[in-house]
Structure formats: C-alpha cells, structure tokens
Image 1 (tube, one colour):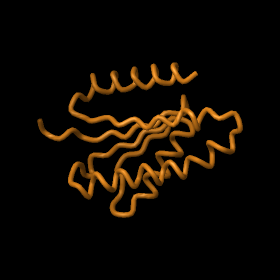
Image 2 (cartoon, one colour):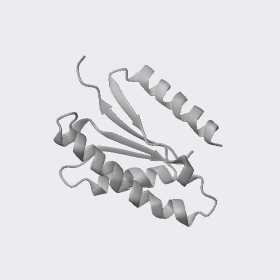
Image 3 (cartoon, helix red, strand yellow):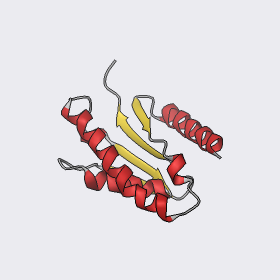
Length: 116
C-alpha cells in the first residue's frame, strides 16, 4: 500500500512541477499513521501532525527561508484535516491558500521557489 502512495505523490509532484516549475514542494509522508486500520488513531493524529508541520513552517519563515504569502497547503482525505490543523496552528500570520481533496491521504506544502 505504501508504494502506491509514494507513486501517487511522485506523480502529483511531477505534474505540479510541470505546471508551476518555480515552486518548491515539500511532501509530508504520514502514510504509516494514516493507513492505520483503527480509524480513530489517524483521525486524532491529524491535529498532532498539523501542529508539528506548523512549527516547521514557522522555523522556515523566522529564518527568512520563506514567506507565508507563498505557502499553499494541499491535503487529501485526512491529509486535508492535517493541512487545516497546520493553517490553524500557525501563530503569526495566515496561510493564504488551503485545498482539501478526497483522495488518498497525502499532504503537501507548496511554496514559491526562491530565485536561483
């Protein structure tokens, strides 16, 4: 099952980079948790993962590596809940773009690439 998720993520990222070549894509692979057979575990973990990802985004913004203006959060299924919890947990500023889809549980952070 995890291999099919990885293939989907690679295909999704490749398609995105063809359309928007000047972006950086960060994928959070939480398939080990999302694929747990007891649904309440991954459901509860969406908020935990969201807070952890928010802290990382805050580190990047504080270090000047990125601006929240360019961040796009995209999540599928429970990954959409992770994306929403991430946006909610960011303390300074707001994420301008949040997309929730109903496919596989993937989660991607998209941000504009810095000039090369």
